[in-house]
Image (cartoon, rainbow, N blue to C red; front, side, top):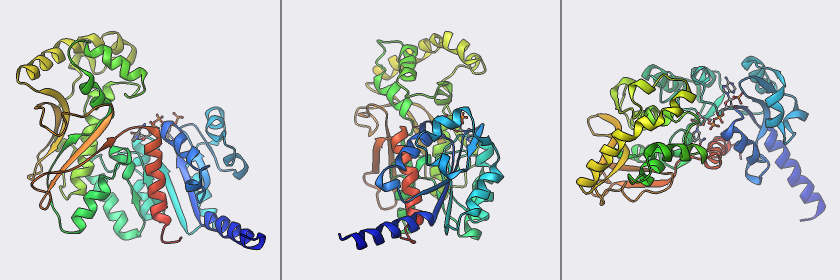
Length: 365
Ligand SMILES: NC(=O)c1ccc[n+]([C@@H]2O[C@H](COP(=O)([O-])OP(=O)(O)OC[C@H]3O[C@@H](n4cnc5c(N)ncnc54)[C@H](OP(=O)(O)O)[C@@H]3O)[C@@H](O)[C@H]2O)c1
């Protein structure tokens, strides 16, 4: 490439970047991995105009360009104010304006519909909006219909495995979801593929925590609520108007341990062992094994909980933190369509967020 052509190409790249303005909410594990992607060729077309954690934010270009922005926000920055962040988006001449939500905040999730109706695109790893109550889901749909904005939600299920996109493509082609089954939690997948009754369940749970597979408070995984939210998102995307309470959820945490402070729960975590050892023995006696499954049938009956599966079941050979989604549809009705792979992890989740942003800006490119 000669110097003039190279100069022109660089100019086109820079103007394209300024046409895509993004604000990032949440600079934790996922948000941090997403910020690192901005320094790769794939992320270089995204122009960051604001970033925030729960306490601080930054909208100054020189600060945002600093590769240590995440670390800096831990100790200071501008005062936290969503209006000021959106003002940074508004001030940008970009044609595409995206809010990225990499938090688990229900409050922020509650404003997704509002942002969409004001013309911002929203890309999210936060499940609380589409996996919360049905009114929230309906508000999102209404905002999408009226605004022409887009909602990138690939990271909310399977950490970006192509589950929601496949389901939507099938539906668009007239294929109907008849049943859905799978393992939707990386930590529960690991726990039950490792658990063979020899090492107490509580010891494995502590190991999962050390390895970063479980949430800091493992009850967030064991309660089944996170899996239920993912099942709701998939069921609603398939046309089932389910309310949160319509999902039957088996909570693996005994009632007495549910509202204890985390440290006290961890001291008493061995209290989980006896009942899970009994469930394991029952599975063995039936020639099967335990898996924490999410299930939806054609009548919209949804449940998540511990099941005994036989060796021939698709979830039986699962290992590591893999997730699995088996979709039986009107066309995939002899064998289900199975999507399987890493269903947790900062890198793949951040990649899913970037993928959704690139999808939104593709028409401009
Ligand atoms: N980790 C995974 O593998 C994975 C996979 C798929 C989906 N997800 C989802 O991705 C989201 C983020 O997960 P994570 O693992 O990155 O969590 P995390 O490490 O706990 O980070 C959460 C971030 O959100 C920030 N935050 C909380 N409330 C906020 C607010 N009101 N405004 C701005 N920032 C706020 C926190 O700020 P502070 O730093 O000040 O606390 C923190 O930076 C969650 O919804 C999670 O379910 C995670």
